[in-house]
Amino acid sequence: MIKNLIFDLGGVLVSLDRERCLGNFAKDLGFENFGDYLNAYAQKGFFAEFENGNIDAAQFREIVKGYCRKENVQDEEIDSALNSFLTLVEPYKVELLLKLKEKYNMMLLSNVNPIAWSRCCELFAQAGGVDIEDVFEKLYLSYEMKNSKPGEEIYRQLLADSGAEPSETLFIDDSAANIETGARMGLKTLLYDVNTNLACEVEKALKELGE
Image (cartoon, rainbow, N blue to C red; front, side, top):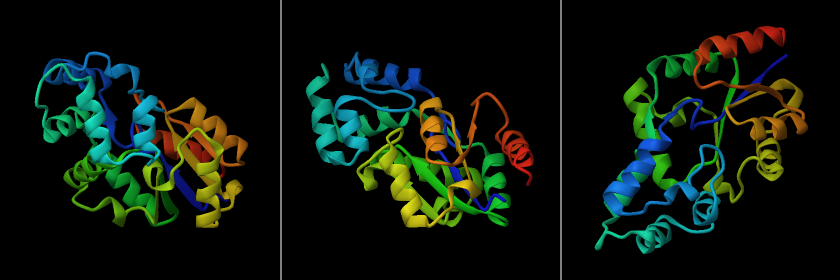
C-alpha cells in the first residue's frame, strides 16, 4: 500500500524554459555561456555549489557578475534572468496535490537554490492561492540539505527524517538519473514525461501499484 508521495519540483510541478533563461543571460547580462552551468536536472560548477548550499545567494551573484560583459550588473537583473527559467505552475497541478494530500503523506524533494525557491513559491501561490508549505508535510531542498539528486545521500536523509518506508512510497521525477537512484533506494517510482498530464500519470501509476 502506498502511504507517501514524493514530488520533484522543477519540470514536474513548475514548468521550465531553459532556452529563455539562457537567452536572457546572454542578451541582458552578456553572459553567453551560462548554459555550461545550467542543466534541467543537475547543475555544474559554481551553480552546483549554489544548489548544494556551499555558497549563498550573494556569493552566487558575485560570481555571475564576473562572467558578465555588461558593466554594473545589479542583483535584481541576475535574479530576473535566473528566474526566467521558471515559467508557471499549472492550476490543475495544485488541485491534484490538494486532492492527494487527503490520502497520502506529501513530500517535496528538489534540487533548488534560494533565489529560484522564492520564485517557485510565488508561482505556486499564484496558481492555487495556497502556500506550498500548506500542501507538503516535508520540504527537502538541496541547498538546505547540502546534497542533491541523483546522489544517494539526499534520499537517505529524506527517508531517515520522514520515517517513510521506501516500499510504501511513490517518487515522481522527470529525470531518469534521479528515478534510478530512487529505485535503488527501494522507492516505487514514476518517471514523468513533462509533455503529459501529471494527474493522469500519477493516477495510472497508483492504479498499477494497487491503489
